[in-house]
Image (tube, rainbow, N blue to C red; front, side, top):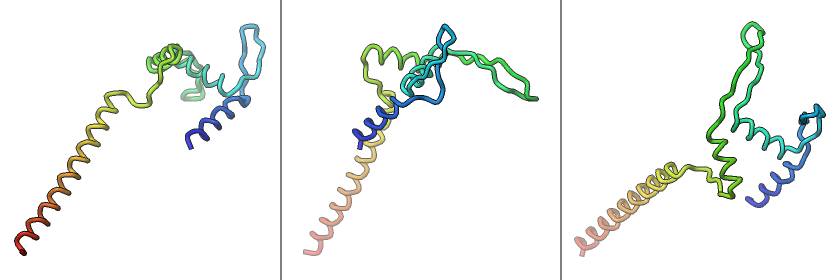
Length: 124
């Protein structure tokens, strides 16, 4: 399943995006979805400005600040580091919860087995 999803993501990423990119000379050129996504990541990492329709249909200038997570994402990708979906502290928490659940299940099982042995010994 994972290989199939990756294959589709790569294939779709090569398709043309519905919007083009305006280069420095003012020429609009088509871009792939992969390039559009990469440009969006860079925009979020560096911050950007946008004009938005606000209350009373008036246009408002809005400044979107740089996103440190996107900056780290770019740095890690460029350095060849594997980007992990969960932060280590969250992964550690999940591991502890899993360990607690396993220990509780084992305790219940041991208690059940112990009760069965006590019953067997008293019946003899």
